[in-house]
Length: 475
Ligand code: PHE
Image (cartoon, rainbow, N blue to C red; front, side, top):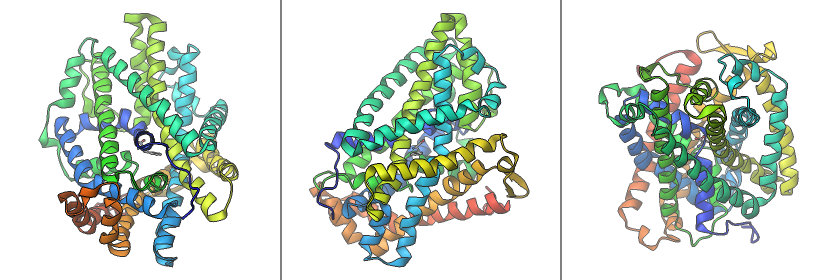
């Protein structure tokens, strides 16, 4: 255990950083839209249950593992098993996954940065043109925005845990909250806003089916940054005095609250833009919502508040999404950074340089796979002859498939290899009442039984549908 491992300066710093990781692009647009499409209040209830009963134990286990080992994910699996090869594989996967998801996330963050800059220089009208996005992502200026994001993320990460990650989270998270509340307050004053609120909150249980449940659980899992090694890494920077269970609850609540509140911004805005909208016809993808639909909607505000006013509101919206994306990106790149420092003995600067180059190359390839380069755009085919771009592969393999698999390995590792007694021991540090509590029983039971089974089902189903176009369970 390295005596001079950096630490967060306070519990609040850690919680804000972990919440910063959790609150991302998915919370702000993806969550509200899928809630509205899939039963409104009914979806919200199911989602909350999934967070509390399935995701929270996994989050607690990740944090316990990281704090116990005081290492990055690879080092954690390695050191707690005395170098057992079988489990090193899980550790390696827990580092490779964030590396690849960082690439996927970087591409989208770069676009957001581009839209933010374009809004600030007065080009909202151009962004609102439905053809703009397709043109924007294929112009070489996108590489300029990419350079901007890489520099910003590296400036934060080079500061280390306290001066970089924690400071950025302490600045951006409260700002994000204020911007969000401000936008909600404004949007709720618009005509027809209440129709959107109603659509969002009134439960419709008839929409629930296996596929909605699967989608809700995957979304909750991704939204809480599980299976990415992030919480293992961040928790390796906290002291034994911290209460992991309490902190996990705070992170889960903050993340879910931001997602919930974002619904009070997005749905009223959609309904005031088009009172006759049928939310079921809205696009499922956060990308087309953020870059195609919402700019059009934001531009229509000019009828009320003028072009400058509409641009200010749009600028606030993109800034909000940008802050959410940057704190997530920082957290995900910290994982391979910590691994390189640990495994290779590199300095932080050297690790970051290696990662900037490697993720940079992959990000450029992804960026060129939306039409710029034919061979990358139609990189391969699977899932019943569907054309897949280089970007699609990274998103399908790592985001859709490997994430639940990492979660599954983690549950099995913690309960059967590291063992429940050790998990309890670790969680009792900083929380005297943990041992013997209902929470302890629930965490130990769920992690060793039904949670891994559910994650296995999701994994098998995803593999069957994504790559072989076979529907196993009818969803
Ligand atoms: N929770 C993040 C989100 O909702 C997921 C994420 C975290 C993605 C970190 C990338 C990096 O967007």
